[in-house]
Amino acid sequence: MLAVFHALSPIVLLIAVGYLAGRVGWVKATSLGDFSNIVFCVLAPALLFRTMSKVHIAQLDFRPVAIYLSAMWVVFFAVFLRQGRNRRGAVMGLASTFSNTLMIGVPLVNIAFGDAGLVTLFALISVHSFIMLTMVTIVLEFVVVNEQSAAAVAAGALPPSGVARWHHLLRTVGKAMKGSILHPIPLPILCGIAFGLTGWSLPKMIDEPMRILGSAFSPMALVLVGVTLASSSIASGIKAAFMLSVMKNLVHPAVFIVIGLLLGLNGVPFKVMAVVASLPIGANVYLFAVRYRTAETEVTGSVALSTVMGVVTTALTMSIAQWLPE
Image (cartoon, rainbow, N blue to C red):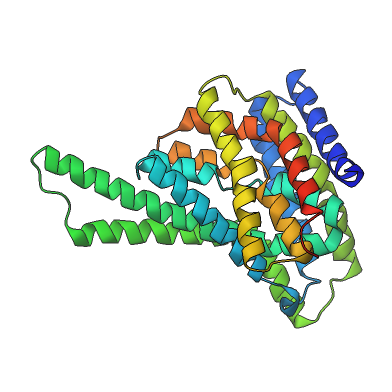
């Protein structure tokens, strides 16, 4: 338990610093976009590229990643079907499974598990958004097409032809896949892996500035979480936000741990993935809620509430992770 406290205490304190900075107005809500761009577009790529450039592809184990993604889909479809297989259900399912792997996951895993844990986490991050967000886009687009067809039939008009519907769906999915790859998170990971395959080393005059930028990512990202919390409201839709937070912070890691035990997962990858599954809801979920105009209030509240609850629920999962098979 002491190890869990040591891992979480700097996380909590840095988020608290950001929250204080936001509440007293040192960092205004209007500046969040610029703050976020520095963290995601400058600091994160430096850390991700530099770390993965030192990793050989043979060292990456994607079995834990596959098990993690399978747990995500079990929870996602359980929520999706429970909510009525509509766009609200898809967004709520995404909120129940999509972790804040970068801003909170990277600092926490770095402190708790070191470089070995980061390699496992970055293997997940390299495909996490691409697979999950692309697949959820497909689900949502199918739902939207069905809604439009049903509305057209109800209005006495002929629905769009099957060819037109499929063309729109394929175009949207292709755009989602492109956006998932040409993104400041997966792209530097893939580039770092490709650079590592060459066997070259970064010149010191490049490596050292990247090391400094990368080391600034964790504290800046956590402060950004705190500032975001200071400008968020969890009062609206509190009941739905609480249920989503419970699904994400407790049910999701429980499902992953059960599947991991059944499939014989063990060691640091098992512990890292269990902790990652318990992380709060990632901000990308809010973008989907806005794009598809559904569950916006619930998602906004759940992102904030799950982050606050994460102090306790992630600590609980980390304690359980210590007893997982070595």
